[in-house]
Picture 1 (cartoon, rainbow, N blue to C red):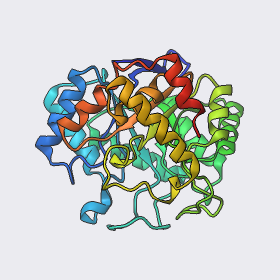
Picture 2: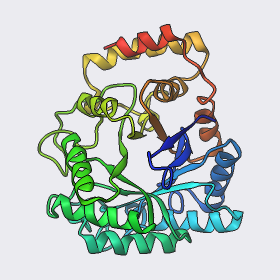
Picture 3: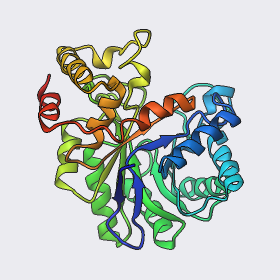
Length: 328
């Protein structure tokens, strides 16, 4: 397994595996026995970084979420696992009432919500600290300073280890970190965005943004990471839900452009040269670059997880990486 360190303060930093495991559908779509088997294999392989959220997965059974956190709590207790694992969760995307689809009407990021949700997540997980606590989605209705102070206070008192922001714009990261510094509080040290080898279009307005594709890693975000070496990026949906290897999983509008076709050609070349799968090449490309990127993979079976684990030992040559980088 590969490892890297999140955070710069030795008192709060965490050394984590560079391949993170997403638990989004554990406890709902993925049954308990299968979830336990996946988690056991991940830990056996040296994995130490598990990701969830307080709203996972409300849309499956029409709840408010929490099933994933609760399953992780049961599994942690059954295995006697403690501080050796880093568990990340999120706040801000929980529906205020049972729901089956995402709407604009979410819990938001008022300080009271941030604090109360942390307490609920700790209870679900059976822990006394949240190792990484993310704001799940921006909340323009709450002043950023109030959000930063709420997260920073939890980190300063030890309820939270590291503060993270997910799906925020690059300017918001910078502003949030400046506010935290001014207040003398711990600031954001982990980002979570969608990132993969194919480049997504950034001009597609979505549910929570009229200004383009919120949550998609773009050049501004990568440039920001390059300028701030203390930050790490957790890359969600790096395998495009199977679209790299399955013809029945279309890429969709975000990837319908000439750059995708150019990158597909080079990706296929490297797959042939290495004998690895396209998924493994993509994960190896993400993990082996100059920026601290942690791909966050999901798995509905141990077999799926094994394919992702196979990427950990895949070393791309400098020439292969150069071709992959320059394509498209």
